[in-house]
Image (tube, rainbow, N blue to C red; front, side):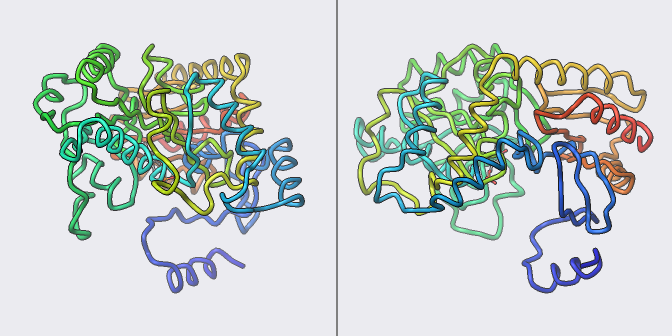
Length: 389
Ligand SMILES: *Cc1c(COP(=O)(O)O)cnc(C)c1O
């Protein structure tokens, strides 16, 4: 198929919900991808932070394809040795007590919201349901996670939205206190707001927030869907802040390219969701679990994570030296680039034409390279970026 054929059928048969680049990919290897015409791209996107081991990593491909040959799905009515291995590994690595498997980030956040509300229901009764989120957050596309997303543009068309969410300004503890009422059960944040422009929260604010939540028996939920699984140079980003949230959610990188999400909680929350109160058909699917096990075996390793930090530092240094760059934000290999000319969309399009895939987030350029990217590919991609800037 040619690019034109794909584009025609795409617009004819698929709901037009995405603004796509003029690229149709068919193949990849680590941080390099090829399109229908055989054109090569350096890929600084990893499928929006999903392919943490890059395209078609050998160990991951073997794990996933062997599992597909053995048993692809079996429902959550039966015990799954793979699910228990992934769960045990995640809990042991993080110190969390229990987890729930979902298929996406939005669903992982839905689980966190239900968990927080039921904890509060069981302890305080049915009025204490409110959750404070931050402005400029992003928590997903379901009706409830849209409600939790602190951007007006997302609160349109789909009325009525789920009740019980209010918003506060990032890095402003007084604003959080103002948004809290006697019926607040939780506060939910991203430690680095990804979709709204790669903005890290300040450490002092995060520490005050943790203490404030603790003092008022409100649960601190950290959405690590984008920041988790090695992206910021630690297994999870909360480690960079020296706090331990009550609940964290993960998705994107966790399956290495297969749909998986996770909601992890501390001991006091481990038995709140009981049989019949939550569930999913696909969650913890064996093939996704086989991928996740390979991802965790590789990423949760000091050498691997140090390499992520070093590559991140290298990106920051090289990007800061580019004269068109105003500022670089983020941590590890979650990178936002503020451009002097404020023309990120235009630059991203130009990069694709010239063989480099990059993302945007609001008005910044955003890079989420595979964690396994080589310095050679980093240099190749940065040279194309410099030219396009
Ligand atoms: C991508 C993302 C989500 C949504 O994940 P889906 O898998 O698309 O549902 C939620 N929260 C954050 C922080 C994200 O980056």
